[in-house]
Image 1 (tube, rainbow, N blue to C red):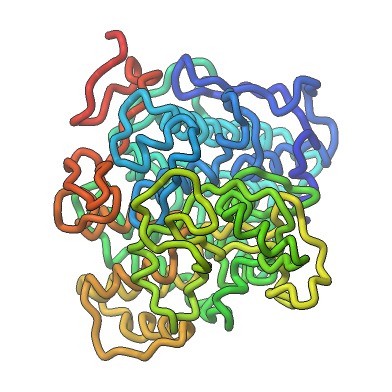
Image 2: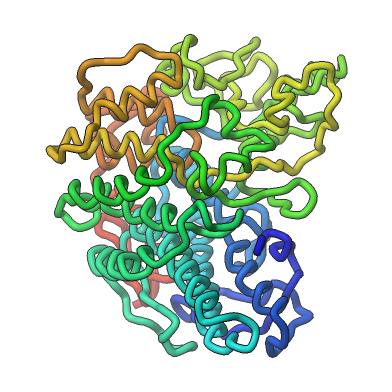
Length: 523
């Protein structure tokens, strides 16, 4: 069944015994009008759908701006604003943004607290859904319940992956944890080992993408998550796992092995046609009417459009980006991304106009201000991508483009990376397949720098860049400086310990602190 119809906020509200990571992690029901028991099939579907919806909807974590704490938005900010693809101007005053964009976020950074709370809240949702599924036998077959349980385990593993990648250490809970008790704190390697073991048990028995319905996680999506963990295994554990990464990728390309014909259509309002059994292996569904969010592609469209530029076209009735009004003037393109993308590259979805490529001035973003505008995520459908004739209704805010968590092109580039590290897996072929779609010439070989650049050109603004720079040894130190790295326009070295974010001060007394950061919590 298609779960997205159940994912509307408030479709099902349930008083759930959510296991928080520490005493002061704030969790709350989605709706104060709650149910205390599940009495129908629809109730159970609502709980399952709410767990999926945790990646796109607000609620659950207490902040003064719910939209700012949407899962996909927090993840994107921590991955992209801290690296060389995007920067937000000083015109935005959101708590935590200056520290993240200048690579000096500490334990008291508000955005780190919001992200750590959000990731753990999502884990708590998954655990509670696994618990209530024990009582769902009246409404579902044993096979259906098993399928749901495997999906919830993979959803949970996604949040653990983000904790491992971004924070390193964290609490370990599963459906067997006692609600209300403080769980054990796992090291980065312990978390990695536990998550990988759970995925290896859950994923092989999942439904393949060809049999899965839109909005639910497939076997290929599970293997994709495993591949991402293996890809970064040397960073996480000190031991490289290139062979395991390649094997997980090869499980995917057995059944999903064709890139979409046009890159730009992967990020438009009708990109759901590529989701699941297409190039977008795992997406977070969105809809301008029924799945509204201030995160996801809404944030990456209206949030990242220059208001003066859109107003200029709107005055003439030309809604060329599919948006009529109201851009927020948020994240802009850093020059390093613009310079990496040749103008002949079909993936260059950047608006220049009268804007400047440099980002010397991060004050108000005027029509001739500093920083190009990213137009990778648009409101228009594939059938009228450029809004010719302006026949399509221009939304005021919410985007219908699904947020692409993982794509097949990433699988191809992972195989190229595994091959580069000694695992024979036809890496050059896959590397060139990505380039061919972009309209670029094929090559006879590639270096680590070539591959890192190709990952930027292919996957920019999709929430992978910080992890990639760390894995390639380009994030900390002086090996590679980008504009405003370390808070200096020309870029400066940042210390090695910043390859992990700080544990938020609210959780230090239970979890401790990552090396290099000051301990600020009471002992």
